[in-house]
Length: 479
Ligand code: UDP
Image (cartoon, rainbow, N blue to C red; front, side, top):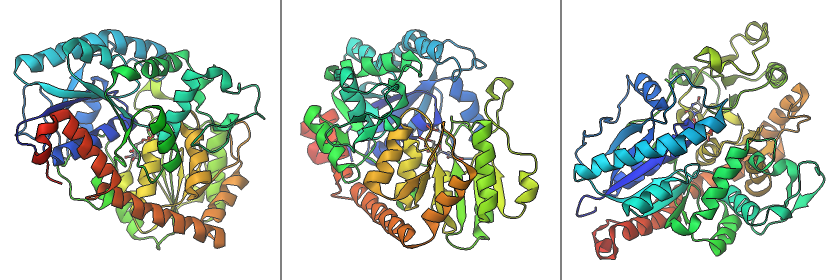
């Protein structure tokens, strides 16, 4: 344990897939005696408070100090109303965050300082590179938590240093070779580098890469054994600390040092009882994370493929809460009737508990990095159905490097119903599926070792803590 109170500030965008790894990092730091404050833009506050009313919640007021070490949650305004559709107007949102948001975050940190709470370090999300300027102004050392795969970090790093090496979206037959990653086709590259994605993402990531020299620690939510080649290759370009997998302690079979979640939606826990009734390794679990929505064609074909597979399934479909959130396709009208008794639809589930359930056979996933790490830790084979951003690159990595699943073939981003059925059979039946299950179980075992005493990620996080609290405190950390 740390001998004196050490405070770390974690700053994240209020998106579920960004907040989850920050919270898990907070829990790891608390388990090692560090006091943590998580700051996020306040669009999340209503939803978090609503969804966590039945579960343990973190103190949220600025001056509420849990008996340290602990976690408290604070919100700063990005200057936009709660109703503003940040997904649709991402350009205005990111600009508001880096102007008004930055001002308000700075004020918040000064309030803590006035209360005599000093931060040993600020860790921010890579989509908020402007936090480095605030940290520099206030004289606080800063680091980043890279919340995606190291493979994706490596691709972006090369892209922003040498954009001309990269094929354009108009040349789908060209390949890209980079040290540490499989040979990539245009369809395997992160979509944010292409002009079809809003330019604000490229500007933000470029800003982040340009600021790397001012960032003292690059923590990566991955582990050396998972992305061996990418980690080695990246470490030659810029120092990194792979400290993952930052997933729920339940998935890793660990005791929770600090309970509580920052979920923006209430999970339908009754799906676990439904899973209890199903035979072992029988259920297809389907989720596309917190942001992605399927088009009507994707929805129709997936529904038809599931229906024809004759397998039980648990499908997360997050309905819009407000009118402006209505996007994407709807289920075919007869689907529920036709699959009655065999399938369960939920709005949001406790994904960690679902993946660890013995009835789950495989996971049809959009390849968000949190879901990917969670399925790796749970030892569940995957069917990759990626959409945008880092997801195509992660799908390529899953199939070519991890070999714990298959990727659906798509035409114009849509998998046919036959392809859905075929993928389910490939991952669940026959000798190839046995190989994938074996790989999935090997990865599950490896992920538990790296966070245990002496494991690579545990050593890296201890090293990071030693550096933030100063070498003389080295002996005060319990191994
Ligand atoms: N998640 C969940 N319940 C659900 C669907 C998703 O708890 O019904 C969690 C999932 O466990 C993961 C996060 O939401 O931690 C989604 O993050 P990911 O990076 O996979 O995708 P994103 O939402 O960022 O696209």
